[in-house]
Picture (tube, rainbow, N blue to C red):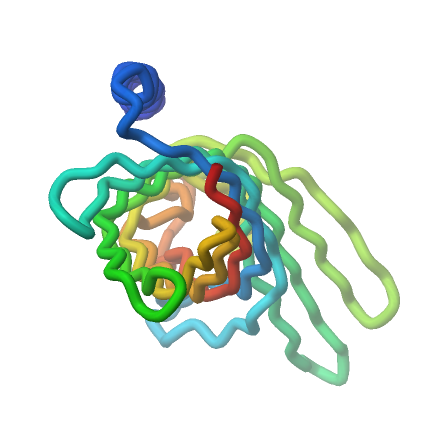
Length: 226
């Protein structure tokens, strides 16, 4: 049901792009950049997660639809990668884990772009929807590594509560960014993102405890508006 809602939202968004583009008032652009991502939340015992940032990226297209002087509605369609990594020691062993999840993401932002100098200052905020479709988790004990595919679904299908490769596909949250666009159409912006959805799957076969993963991160984007 959630995947159908996501696809419906994406379809309506594309139709909105086309309809507004025909009026000549909508402009389009491309955007790409580097992100630093991690998971916020709680571990199995309810303690705060202590995971490290990991470098990821995003790339895609955006549109700007005027709604008022200096204000725009900015929807987009991005390919993004998210995840986290951790390092720890236990009984003399060096333990590490790295998560890499791929999403199709729809940011839906309100953008304020007043003229400042020879360009425009940019301040934007709004929600995002994302749908995970592939990913890997890599476990390392000392020098021995094992990589497994992320399993997307609402339910956790392992009896081992420490087998954390099960994730929900649907993610959502909030974006905030600011930057500057030059007269040439080239822009730079700083992004922050706070995930609001629980992305780890619900455990129905074992004691789930209080495990809670939410995506969060920040990064830098370069863009070009046609």
